[in-house]
Image (cartoon, rainbow, N blue to C red; front, top):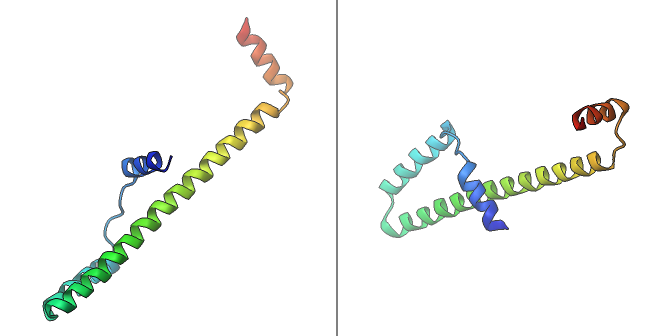
Length: 99
């Protein structure tokens, strides 16, 4: 089921435009890479990659939690409608539709 939810996420999620803070991080990252030697650059790149991975996983988790909540709410509403006694107006409408 998580594969289906992942496909839904990929299909409907639209990334937000880059904020000023994200742009500043990107600029600082580039400056740092230019100033560091190769071993330190690799370390910085690993940090940035892992940070991006954490952000992506949190976004997916947030989507999944929201989807599960919406599914539970829809189920509750469906149960509520099935267990509710129809009002006289609803009965009259149902009778009119069946004629």
